[in-house]
Length: 143
Image 1 (cartoon, rainbow, N blue to C red):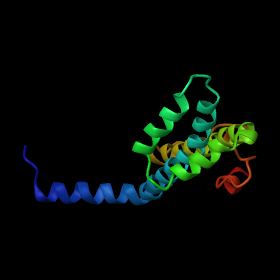
Image 2 (image 1 turned 180 degrees about the vertical axis):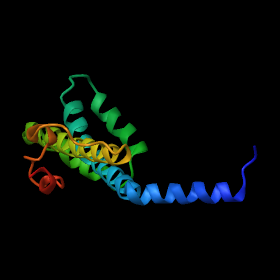
Image 3 (image 1 turned 120 degrees about the vertical axis):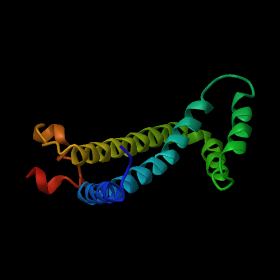
Image 4 (image 1 turned 180 degrees about the horizontal axis):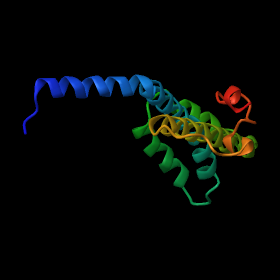
């Protein structure tokens, strides 16, 4: 019961056909793009929330720890957001809305990828599908 070259060829052919049919590479690219994009609004949200915690030197220690982990180009953005104490509520709102928007895009793309992978037929109503959203790539099939 060993693997034969003909069986291996057939398995690779089927795998390639399924990758092309299900648009696996495009779905992986979209998911990775949205996942990386979600880091920035989440970082703004986290920084704005941590700035409101009333512990002495907590935020300064947090910035030092973030500086060790994050790439060097990100820390000036975090420092500029945190030095703007007058608009901290606006940064909190912007970070929350941005994070929710990007994370919802990740889930939308995940639903599309899983539907394609499992040949699922969309059975949800018009409003539950998200066709009402501006810029949704699923708008034409919803109509």
